[in-house]
Each structure stands twice: as structure tokens, then as C-alpha cells.
Length: 250
Image (tube, rainbow, N blue to C red; front, top):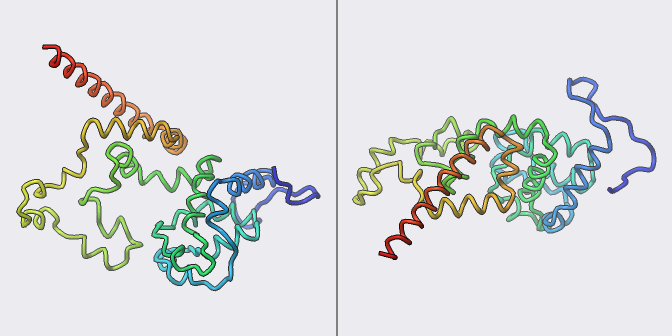
């Protein structure tokens, strides 16, 4: 563990808020996990404090979020500030990586945010469950189909960070799709359907990569649902393989 001070550090707390006291050792452990991430040194190289990242950030226009602040907190090893940002601000990033494309120092604030999110999940910070709970439907869809959204999930209420442009896709999609000659495009349901073999492969990837373990930490109920679906799909796949073997024998 990295020692950031030789003197004993008092518990960290905001005297005007109801936030619980956080021991300094906890803050150190969190930062050590952040800095120990294999991508950390690739995503941060310094900071000119120019503000280009924040000026071009879509999320910064709608939320209390600044990519520059994230970089500054990490570069200066502001443990209290990092901990505070991990409770709300890191969840405002839309992961568009405009910041990474514009930074003259070749930093990637978006990449740093992803590291912070992973560490927040690992340490089971309260913000993780609070922020991700409304996205259970999306998480279920990602894990079960590999797709993030179905077309009928895109509404201006669900994506305020898209600004007024979301109105361009907030339309009667079924009516618009009927104008497309291809019969398969006349429905919104196809985005929810995935080949059985692909489903089993996805589940295997999520399981082997630790995604399901993280999901269990975030939402145990959703994890149980996904696990049940996974077992059913695997059973179906095994039955299909057995049928193919029987047909080959015949």
C-alpha cells in the first residue's frame, strides 16, 4: 500500500453534510487500486489545465461534471476529492471520448472515469447501486443479448444529456420502419433476439471476464435473473447439440 503521509491522518468527513466518516486508510486503498490499474499510466500523462476537455464535453453542459477536474484530482492525488467524485460525478460521463481526442497531453479523462467506476464497484461504494439501479433493464439487455438499447428505449426523457437532438430519434419508430422495404425491419423486436449459440458465447465471456461477478455486487436480484436465463439457454444449447448428434447417427 502506498503511504501518502507519515503522520496519522484523521477520518475524512464533511462537517456540513450527513456523509459517513471515511478512514484515511480506506481512501489510500481506493487510490492504490486506481493507480494500480493496468491502464492508468496509459490514460494520464500530466495536465496543462487548459480546459479543452471540459469545453468540448457534452456531459459537462448538462451535469455537474468536468473531465479536467477528474484529471486534476488524480494528478494531484487528492484522495478526498477522488472519493467524493466517485459518488456522483464519474457517473455523468457519457464515454464519448471527445476529451481524449482533444487533449494536447494525450490524456483520456473518459478512460480514467472507467477505471474509477471499476474501483467503485470493487469497493462497493453506495453510489454504484444508487446510480446503476435505474439501468437494470439496460444491464439485462447487454448481458442477455450483447446490445445496449432497443430502438423503442430511446426517448428524450431517458437521455437528457443528448440535448435537443434526441427529438430527432424520439419518433413513431414503428411507422417509420414500415416504410423500409425489408420485412425484417418492420419490427422493433429483432433488437431483442439473439442466436442461441451467440447467447451462450456471451454468457461464457461475461462469466470468464468477471462481468457477472461485478453485476452481483451491483444488483444481486438482476444477477439472479441473468443466472437463471443463462442456465436455461445453456440447457437449450446442450439439447440442440444432442439432437444434432442423434440426427448424424441416423
